Length: 130
Image (cartoon, rainbow, N blue to C red):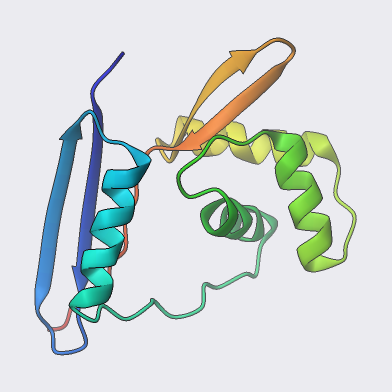
């Protein structure tokens, strides 16, 4: 099993930056504990994402609904249509998920006739102040 690497860069409301690298046997429980820590030090949620493109909408669905577990293009399709009340072809979802994999945002594995995807980078950052 390959070593997993997760980098989390956040900034609190006072401008303090936190950088955390997780490497090795990273489990769901360990990542949830990191998020609990972030909640304890009062890290604010980032502003609402800009959803002016189909790709941004698909990434928003993936990021919010499947941050730690695996998912399929069919699951994303179902969530997309529920969230935005607009039809979309499964091939469009699959194309964007393949692009996310190419860009290093997700990884995919084949299970039977379908690909299963998982987010490989968890990144939360605020714009840098000058």
